Length: 386
Image (cartoon, rainbow, N blue to C red; front, side, top):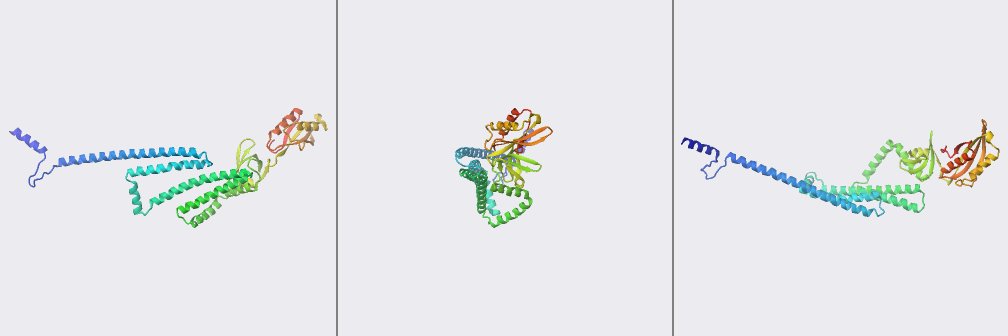
């Protein structure tokens, strides 16, 4: 009997009890804790599943939007390359085509998380910020900047091409092309100001202040800029000409590659490229070696007195130069007596060659060496060939 009583007491300690005073049952603390634990587990599990599902859906939507945008870009670029648009404009339009699918994908992805519209509502209600208007203005600004640069480059290229058809020199073509380019960018800037409803007086005043600061801080750059425009206008040389620039103590001889805003680029006769600031070019002595179609070359021929025969040696040199087909025959080559010193006679042989055919001088040197193998030969003209 005692054993049965002990078992009943143990079972009673582990089972719920009920109070019959009101006719309702009250759960024990052990049961309540179990239910709360199960509820928390269910909530955590549900939250994890929802988060994972949102991540998967958002990632999938963005990948689909990106794939669609890249496909549209490929089709757009392939078509625009066949038009007259500049490469910058083609690539810009290709990038702009990708943006709309990405925007739509981003909106859908944010809407899945239920954060987009609540964030916009909070900004509008608490800070009085029109998010939609700002976003639209920002999109218009970015699109306008990209398109204006692309179309300005295209119009610049078309302007240079059109002026080339009218046989204007390359300097004028480049100058007018740059003017058109800058003008279109200025017009685009005013359009951007109108989008944001900024009065013109504000940027004009700001530009005035910035201009004064830039003028003081970048005097040398502004000198190069003004000198570059002057070189294009005055045309002391053309792009493609061979010039000699004396910047003591160095003489630069090379072909003009381009007259840029800051510097003039030359390809030296030795093959290197050098950029000389426009201000230095403007203030230095510049010789245009190819301004005329022909240029004179002078070779000094030094022979010993024993090998020199008056009149005969000069005539031999003159006839030898006339037989070279690459040398211009009119005016005819001339040979003049220059000096007599230390038992040697120096004769100056002058002849004319095309301005762009420097190798003709080398041919003349080789031919004279064959005629007078013991003579000393030296180039006197053109400068820089020695």
